[in-house]
Image (cartoon, rainbow, N blue to C red; front, side, top):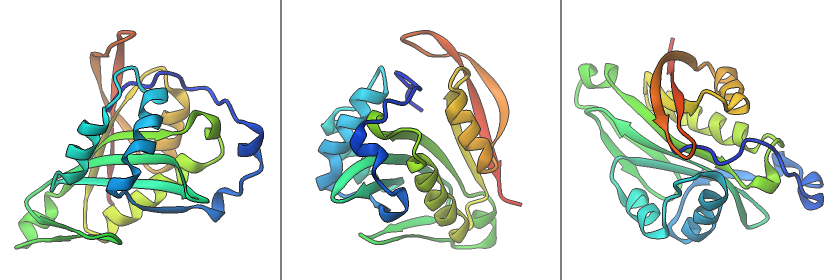
Length: 190
């Protein structure tokens, strides 16, 4: 997971007036790349470029969700499927087909990025995205979800714990700019 540039909220006047429940979480499309790239630039010290995001989105093993409110992308989640099933994507859904039960039992996903536009942080957008992702994972028999997070990013850690993630281990000096340890967190489907 990229390292967060800042963890605080900078809620604007416009952001205070939105009803997060009126937005939608959907699969990311190519036309969302520019807005997602802008969120990357204000969220991470080593942001992905538009070219990198386009390659990631086209990757057959990637899963990207965005949160859209009134036509504007305010947050996103990017993850990669790690398993032996076949990932099938279209504009509306993700389905994983498994040749046999062994593959199903070994399915897992690594969340690479979760980010919300800095003016809209603290409103529950990240929670909406993570909930939609978790539901998709469960509906596709994904048993384990991994992610990395800065040890100092208490807001993100709290969000992940809310969705059943636990700290599994520490990666020493995993993040740079500034150098910091990262937690590996895991959610195992019960």
